[in-house]
Length: 250
Image 1 (spheres, rainbow, N blue to C red):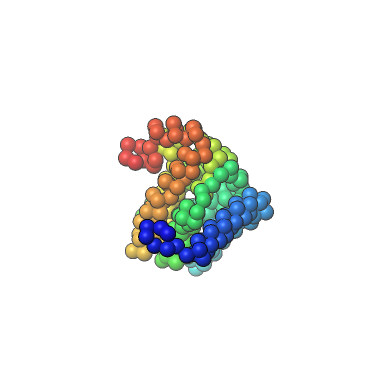
Image 2 (image 1 turned 90 degrees about the vertical axis):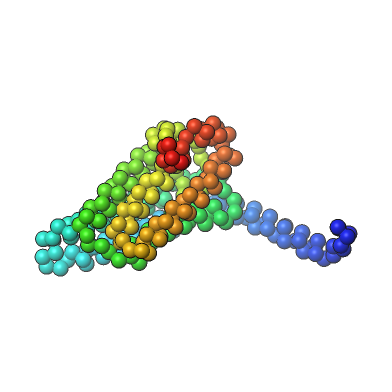
């Protein structure tokens, strides 16, 4: 009896069986994640998306500038510059993912991984579905954003070293380079680069994608902080004296 109602033994058995099954699946998933072959396969698949995007953008750009007299236009040169920067950023992301080291811990549950997946891969699909803008001003601004995003990404990763990851994972607390001022410089650099891509393919849909991506990144940050706080005791001291993304704002 419970609260005046009768609990059927079969219901208790069924709940226990479900709990055991969930526990078994969780253990097997944890073992699979620790397997080196699985880790390499995930890195190869994840990085391959950006390699494919780089090839598609390069192919599309070549088709757009191959017509006779196309290179005589300043707009086409601006387009070529912005596309070159976009391809270069794709290749940087490919290299970072394929070479990232294994983690010592990572978040449990589907939502942290889903937020990381959406935040990492969703915004770059705009280069496939978006309409290219042949505006000289927009393409120059796009190139500036992509170059700034690339430089900040490279600078951050050089200081981050083997602590780089996509899904919420714990390796060590980094407090040098841009991490002296903000806790998530990689997210900031990615957002700057995404803005550069949006400027190339500017449309209402691209703007919606940008705002959705920002919302996902904002939700993604607490997952990472919770894992670091739980796994690395020194992170609590570090995070208490740093801004998340923009010093003086958030």
